[in-house]
Amino acid sequence: MQTIRRLRRLLFISGSATALGLMPLAAVSATPHEPNVETTSVTRELPAGAAAIEQLRLSDTLAEFGEKNGDALALVAAAKIRKTLPASLTTPATGTTDPRSWSALLKRATQLAAGDPNVLGLIEDVRKLKVRDIPGIGDGVRLLHKMVKRQGFDRAEVRFKAGEVAIVYVQPEGSGQIALFVYDEFNNLICTGNGDTSQSVCRWRPRWDGSYLLDVRNYGSNDVAYRLAINREIVAR
Image (cartoon, rainbow, N blue to C red; front, side, top):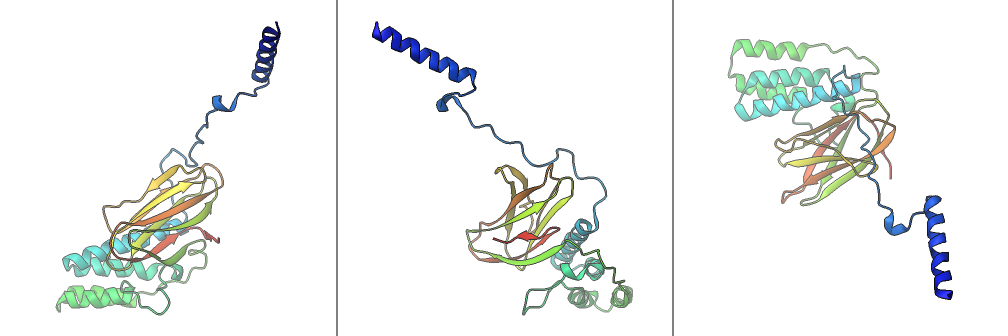
């Protein structure tokens, strides 16, 4: 009889807990949180900061093509873009010179021109180009000079606001190949940069204000210095 009463009491407690939503811990499964990213593609017109980073990436692409193929015109085009970028995206690391500054690119283009008057004329046009100082175009954009150890990773946290275009661009300074991964605050993979080239870029639009982890990985056998361009300030830790 006591055994039956005890069994009824346990069944009553179990039923009451279920009715109150107090499920046993073993029955509760963790529900993954939705990724903090809009599903629509980033196609609308980019704000000035994001557009400037895209221009930096285009300049790097042209410079890389020109250097690999001995194409002076590609280097001239890269230099022209570089010259119009805000200073916040073209400042070299402390104590170094930038091999892809507009002046360095024009110097190399002059060597490749081999006296061709048409190419030399284009080079001179870029050298004389007057760039208007427009305050604000560089607002919110940052260029950081960082290092990722061999077979290692370099991580940083950044916050973006809902609806704004987020863009992160990484480019090795010199030889080396690195990969970029972006995770939201719930550890959802938001974006993977293009690891097939020397540069990686991620762009997305958050659904709500939130933080993101930038994970730069180096699978090579040498340390790699790299530039990170972003249209938000890195969160200090």
